[in-house]
Length: 165
Picture 1 (cartoon, rainbow, N blue to C red):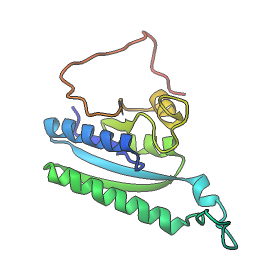
Picture 2: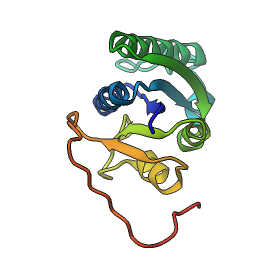
Picture 3: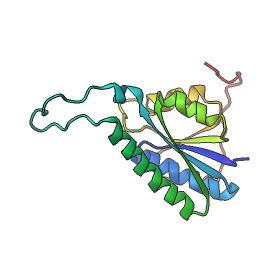
């Protein structure tokens, strides 16, 4: 049933819980775990500082720094997956988070994400997670602050066709 699981990683504690949850489910089904990090397009489009930044501010990171961060994040996650005895695939993308996750999800059986990531905010789900739930072609497991034993099942159905918008 769950032969290939997609995990969205952004470096937040919630995405680490999503990884741990996917590993737990992956062990049950001997799944391959696809680990991905997406750098938002708007972060890459920001102009780096042309002169030294004001005191107390760091210069804006460049594309190479985003890629380096992503590679470190994916390498660490892949190590955790292989230590659990599972196969890990990695994907680094740039673009819109939900669009890229949807594209990767077309080849997976489920998506695991944190309840909210590095943007956080007042929304208890976060804007990307909320949109992903609404538009995903695959089931979305939204992980909180701890790994669930997933020893019980609850299903919510509203009686309407799935949203494809």
